[in-house]
Length: 549
Image (tube, rainbow, N blue to C red; front, side, top):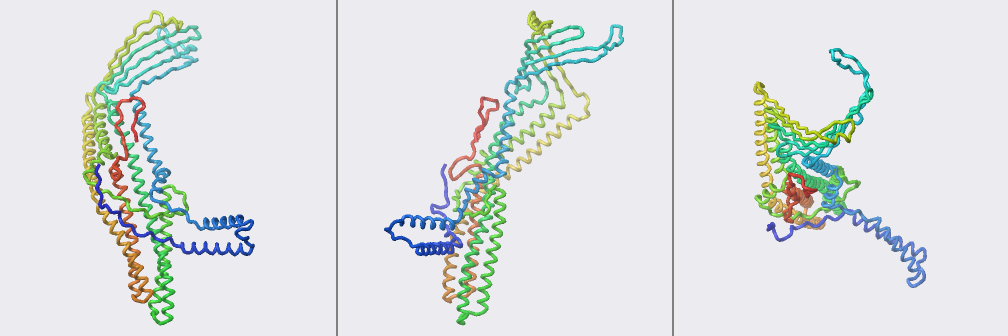
């Protein structure tokens, strides 16, 4: 597939923010090294060529390594790392996998309905000792004590017929009767019987399951991928919520350092009479405002980090996030995005499933309110004897055929009302599906069309951020030599901070749009590959095949 990009040049990136406190860490490390030199001098360090020089050198290297390790800050987390952790350990991701597994076992149950079922039924023993009424030949009733055993055992092999909704079976049944008072024992044996049970005019559940269950199973596989992409989108939003506050705290920390230095210079210039008291107070106010902004930004970052940790399942007490690079937003024609969405989305399968379910309810209503009949037939051999083995001699044929039916003669329009209700429900579902499908197509087109604009906005925001930083550096240096006013410096500072926040917001919008388009289409346009492959499963069971995710 041919790919189109906005530009052959990479998006300009602003220089990274300098970590606050790096100067302090370096100074502390330098002081530790000087202290170690003084300790060695006091202990009497041997000459480089003397005995024990290697031991002292090793001790020095060990102490220096320990001091450097103590000053090492933890590694920052990147956006892909946070997304991968959320997809592997978050509660939302586990819930999506559980939902897919439930659909899988429903699919297994559907497939089992088309396989032969072998069952063993019986009553063993069936002993009874009681006083029962016995009708005498003259019509009177006599109560007699009886001790009986009536046991049976049956083995049945059955197979459902999906096309007609019927069932064929092969069975073997043996029954034993014991009268302990009369010392009588009889066996009734049916070694083999072949039968058919066929509903007529009834609702065929198997036929509709054959149309719906494969569709539902495919939908669950695609739904899992959609949930993962949606999780990635949500994690991106939470990630930038924390990152924007951390960047604001870093910017405010830099402003605190700069304003402290400017206040020191302002006091010197005020002592020389080259700065007014109003400007000096303004410098002090700027320092206090920067400190307040830093404290508030750190507090907001902590609150946002709690939400990110809750959603992703991270156990880290503090999060240090890295500003991600700009995503490579591929220009995607809306027609191509819509085509991929229609081929890959679970929502499209959901539309078909809902329409079929509405049709099924109409068929169910018609099949349960009108003429209903059941044809039953079986053919086999049977015999009875006092001994079990004697029952296999001189077997007799057995045939049974029955047709039971039910026809509503007067229902005062009940069947018509039920069928009409089901048809109107079907029409309503069709209308809802058409409306949702139109909304879905419009959403995909708009999302694909906005990528070009978002990429351009991100490039402009990066350029503005770079220029604002350079202008602030020039304004700060110019103010220190007294060539511009404090108002001009304050404006340059505000523009720098605003440009940095605008760049982070543009970066957030671009990343969210990237994952949003992936979730809407289930297609990676950068790599040119489908995010999920679901070959349609066979409507009839065949081996252990299934859907591949």
